[in-house]
Length: 71
Image (cartoon, rainbow, N blue to C red; front, top):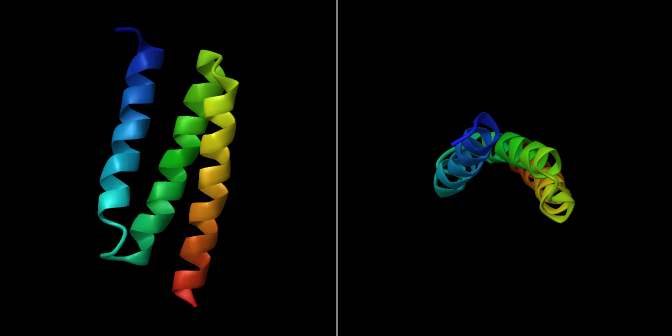
């Protein structure tokens, strides 16, 4: 398993964990957004630009949800 694959595995694993914990604290929503950014980077680096694009959109959606939960 190469380092890019490990990076992708870590990114989507973090997404799963933070998504499961979102209801506990607003910071988990922000952490989910950060994990989406990492997954987006993985998608673009791997050459799967549709995956990278969708994950980038998810990151913006999650960041907006975090912003609304804080106020």
